[in-house]
Amino acid sequence: MSRAKKSSPSEPAPLDETFWALYGLTNQSETRDKLVALAMSEISRRGILDVNARSLCDLLGVDYSLITYHFGTFDGLLAEVFVHVHELWIASIKEALGHTYSSPEERMRAVLEAQINRAIKYGMVVGIAHLPQVSENVTRILNEKFPRRLAAAVGFSVGVMSMLVSDLKAGTMTDFQLDTVREPEDVLESPFAAEVPAAIRIQWAMVGPTLWMTGAGGGNKEILEVDDRLDVQHQVRVFIDRLILSARES
Image (cartoon, rainbow, N blue to C red; front, side, top):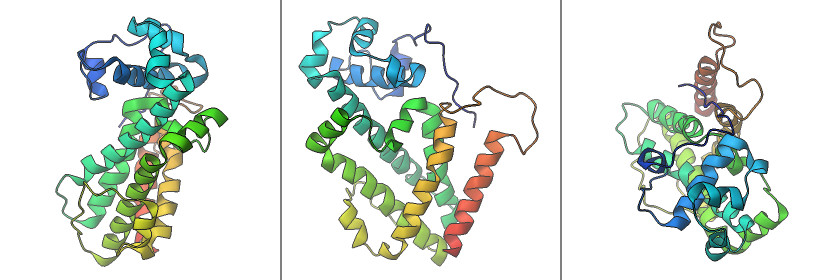
């Protein structure tokens, strides 16, 4: 595990098959999907304030009018990015749950580490999922167009973590249906509803190390030789160990 490094704004990634594959796309993918992926990449590389519709279209080699055609406005594109980041969060959880584990502790650790690995893989844009309000206009678009998709992402995450906490305390391994779409109200009616408060605390606790591992915070220069007290990777592992212990004792 190593933290994501910020690239120089003068060095955009080559838009080749390797780049598009990171976002589940190919060179033949629709322009609309490519614009969302490129916006994610550029936000991580440059920061959200330095990205605009024209710079994205110039990089992709398409006409600026395609932003209006596909998204209405640049804020509409940012709203799509916000939703996609949430859905990558769910995809990372599903991928972790798709493996076989020897214990409930091992499975919970894998799900928590998947969130960290997602931050390393996609960088600063992952932090957007933790912002309560990107902007007034983006928030309005999210509330109008995507409330169900966002609720499903949050509900799925809390539902999974509630199950993991319950299994950890009981020493069981519940079979979880990965294709289940969960709204928050569904989680509150699930067999693991008693663990919802603990699940929410765990997810909030993961925000800090997740943001740190995007490389977006201060002190993102690599230190070649440090002891365990300063080693970020070690501290994240210790943090997850303590989070699992607190879940077992909750």
